[in-house]
Length: 223
View (cartoon, rainbow, N blue to C red):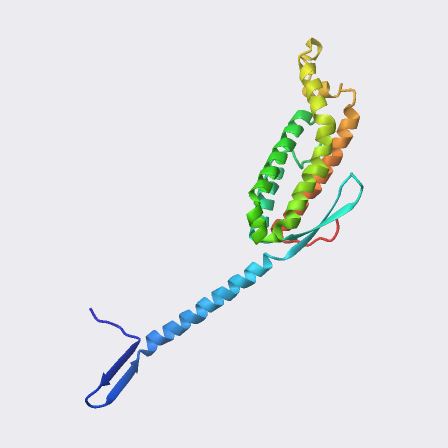
C-alpha cells in the first residue's frame, strides 16, 4: 500500500544534508478543514447567542391588580420547558375559550393536568442546576405565579365545593335525563363560578401566547 505523507523529511548525517518535501494538496486540504471547522464554530456560537436573547413578558394578575414583568432568557432549557407546557395547553381545554356549553368538570380536569405538568417541570429544575445556571430564575417565577396567582385561587375557592355538589346532583332522579350543561347551570353560584373561570381562562390564554413568545423569540412589550 502506498503511503501519503504531508511532510517528507530526510537527513543525511554523513553528508550533512537534509531535505524537506511538502505534499501541497494534503496541506491545502488541511488548511481548508481548519477554516471550515473555525467557520462552523463561529456559526454555532452566533446561533447560541440568538437563543440566549431575553424576551420581556408582562402578565396582570387579579390579586393585587399589579402587572408583573418577567425577563426570560431564551436558552435551550427554557425553550424546551416552555414548549412542553405550550403543547399541553393547546391540546387541551386549558387555554381554549370557555363557553356556557362547556362541561365545568372537564375544564377542571384540564386545569389540574396543566397544574401537575407545570409542577413537574419546576421539580426538574433542581437546586444544583440553578446554582450552575441562574438563567431560569424568571421562568421559574413565571411558572410559579401562574400556579399560585392564576390557577390556585379559583381552584381553592370553587373546585372542591362544585365537584361535591355536581357528583351528588348527577345521582338525583330528576337529573337522569338532563345534560351535564343543564345540571351544572342549577348550581346556586354558577354565574359567580363561571365568571371566575372566564378570568382564569383569559389569563391562561395570555400565558399561552407568552410561552409562544419564549419559543419563537418574538419580543412583545405589552401584555
